[in-house]
Image 1 (cartoon, helix red, strand yellow):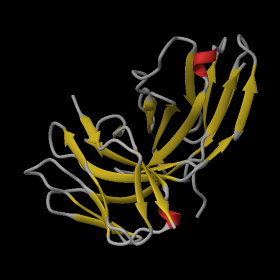
Image 2 (spheres, each protein chain N blue to C red; image 1 turned 90 degrees about the vertical axis):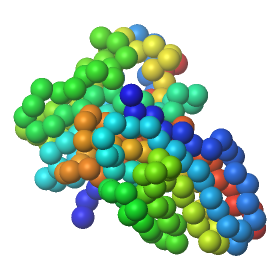
Image 3 (tube, each protein chain N blue to C red; image 1 turned 180 degrees about the horizontal axis):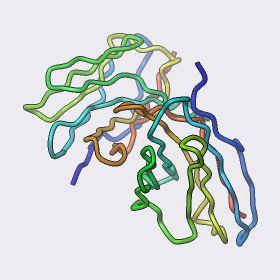
Length: 111
Length: 111
């Protein structure tokens, strides 16, 4: 079946601009996660959605980052006023119970 | 808190050599343990998992056994191929929030 998809695959933006990254989870998966992978920082948890519960935002690095999940399915991660340190690969994952399945990621480059 | 420690890379092996990548963990409760693999330019793929002590996960010739007494989940393969060259991540999940990842180990297999 279809896996987790993310768009765009690559995004180049200028410092100070806002960006939106999209994630389509596996159908029926109730949990959705965003992670960030950057050189020297490894894999960093950002935010977690579980069903209709309030999201766990404890991993978001600043208030410039936000995310929403509409209808329990598609999620959008928004970064406002991007900075060069936001350059990274943003990974989305979904799960039903314990196993998380990852999308291919969005590579964000902030010039 | 939870943590995962992996051996430093890169690990460089000749084709058909035996592979071990060490992974130890610290966690409260009884975590599920995972190995993910990331091929160049791609997202993370689940390689194998184990959900309780003494379970052995296996896939594509790779194996790892959940050792509660030594809090370890070492990855092994009897005969590596050039196509196994990738970064391998050990991870744990306690049922709360996100996966906790190790820092990753790069494997390079030479023909």
